[in-house]
Length: 504
Image 1 (spheres, rainbow, N blue to C red):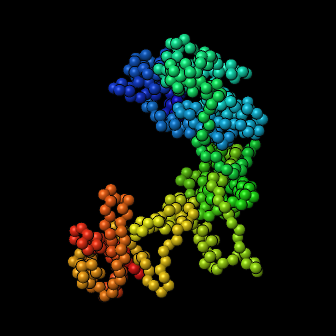
Image 2: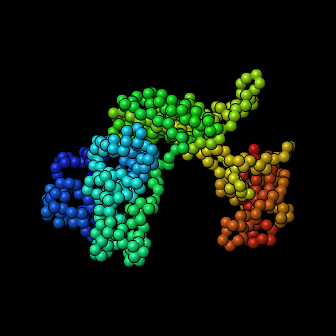
Image 3: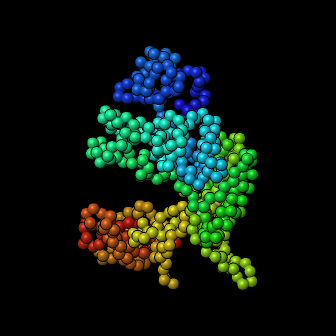
């Protein structure tokens, strides 16, 4: 209900005093899935059919239940909590867990941090129940089932109801039927007996609330290894001011990268708005870099390319820049008389072309600017593939012909190869002397081959991959083609011929 009121307030034309509920179809009946405070006070409960609810509260206003939108809203709330700590995880359907160890110095302690969380969430219409715990499981159980904060954590945990163990409803009812109403009563029993009677999961749940074992917090967003940030007492709202701050943060991150001999390839700026919204600005470079001027240009390109322009609202009170991917950055060779080493082509490749690729990838998206890289496959149509140009180039070198020899592969391949017919050869296993392709007869003047390429047997279930005999041919009009015959002479049915590519 808080999600709907915050994201679509125009739907509530009657104000906040009208009972409201979400409905879902269960079997053949439409039932209530969730209710607001007014509907609960009117005597309605989840699971009630819509017909019965309308009979009791005729003015009930209903909306379809959308659990996916709820999960998206929970993730957005988790993103807004990254201003406190990078380790934030969502626990569907309605909980967040934050590891604040070492992150309270900016808020003068845990209590002030919790008060800031409550205040910011209240601005978005979200009611918060929070608790501190030595482990995520203890904090979650105390937040959900404890009536009030307690100075004694272990005592508070022991007073929790058995539902705090997080077991299945049947197991929870079985514990209650056995006279175990609180977590402390379960802890007082031998774990071997609990496991034998209620299952190993019950014993594990008891050990988690006892603090003996706990699952680590897996953050929703990976923590960047290098982070620089700025907090502002007065939020900033101008885009130029934001870019200036990002330049300063890039210089700080570059100093850390230089000390480690690294350069950043994947950078992400997070702009935390005063009302809790978070704007992400990711960029990626083709080569490791720690040049703040280059990063400034790329961030400017990213902002200009946004479908929805940045809306600072009441301003950003926290700007964070993280280096999500860092790689070794070697030294740059200079000539003795000064300037960069290498020829003009090398300088163009290292400078202008690389910068152009970065700018286009930032503006259009990394998947839209691609490069060809060599692939480890002897099949011609699988020997290369395209990858985003911002990714590192493949270490596999392209095959090159011997000096003075013609190219081994054509510059253009047909996908799929185009069939030819009416093939005439002087000998059955030799090159074609005449063939028809694209409804025209081609008389062969010169031919070279064959180059036999076997199929990839591991890709075929029957283990039989027909061979291909490739020929480089030139017809009497000077056209140079790359033809192949599927199946060697005497192998299978009548051989079939195809044109696979064109030479220059």
